[in-house]
Image (cartoon, rainbow, N blue to C red; front, side, top):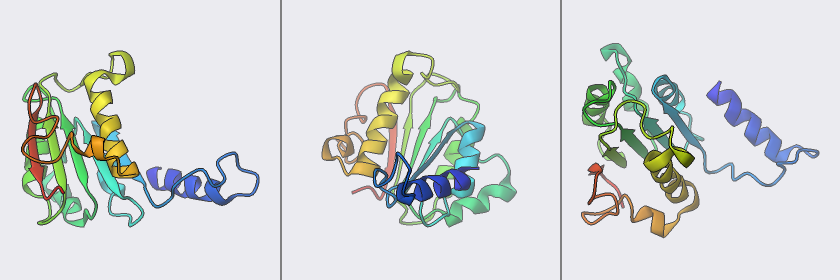
Length: 167
C-alpha cells in the first residue's frame, strides 16, 4: 500500500484537476513506519523513488528477511525507544547489517516501544522526526546539524546516537 500511496501522490501532482497539482516534490519521497509499519517501510525502501527511510521502534525480526537491508539505497534514520523497546535488539542487528557506505543515523531515547507519540505533537519523537524530514526532504542545514558530526544536536542530552556515512 505504500507503493500505491507513492503512485497516487505522483499522479495527483500532475493531474489537471488535482488540488495537489504542482505542489508535491516527487523527487523527495520518504518511506516511514512505526513498529509493524517500520517493516512495511523496509519493504518499499528499495523503490528508486524513495529518497529516505525512517524506522520508528522497529527492526526486522526474521533472519530470512534481513536480505531487505542489502537493497537499501537512500539515507535511513532509526528512532528507537532504548533497551526497553521490544524492537531494540532487532534494530541494532539491522544497523550492524546495513550496506557499506549507506548514510545512516540511529537515535535511541529510553522511553520504550511506544515512544513519545502520545504527547502533544508526538513529543520528542515528533520533534526529531520533523527535523529528519526537514533535512532529508528539504535540505535544511539547521535540521542537518541535529544528526551530523560529533557535536550534533542530538549527540548530547538524552538521546544515544550512532552515525554512519553522514555528511
